[in-house]
Image 1: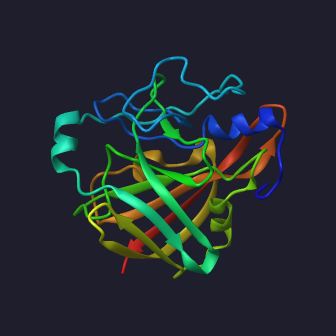
Image 2: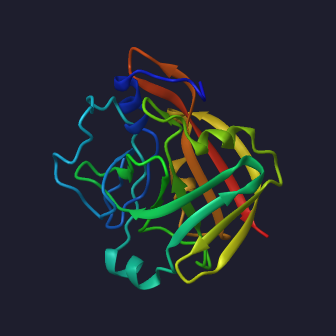
Length: 221
């Protein structure tokens, strides 16, 4: 459950299988995992206390070249604020690790933006920002408060150009991991929107992972 203090091994369960994403070059990542803010990471780029990742959902793959994504990339988001919930976090870009997973950061003050997808200034598609829900050392983290977000709650994302983009939350859903529509969450087409993701729902202590994801969708205002 949100806000629960979990054992060290359980925290790693949060990192493995939190989010999935389409790939920058046709190979879809299968989950969020702690990683440095790069497009790839060496096989041993793991937190010191890491436990083996559990089975991860298959995500629809789509073809898109890395060069095309780079050319179309708008300024990166650098800060996210949800004033009504007391959320104010720095954002850094992440790509894929060696296992094809979107990365998260050990530092609880940092949220991760999927760098090969849309950004707030993009004309189309879903800007994906993810962060941990809790940890052994820091307990409940800011994105845990998203579960209390009502429709219409304002979210502000500032990009590297200094533009502050305003959004209003449209929906907040806790969805079992196997049922999350990752293809839609990381869609590069359609109206511009913001997708915030963290773990949520029940925690499976035997599997050392959360059973669901909290997926928040917000639209520009």
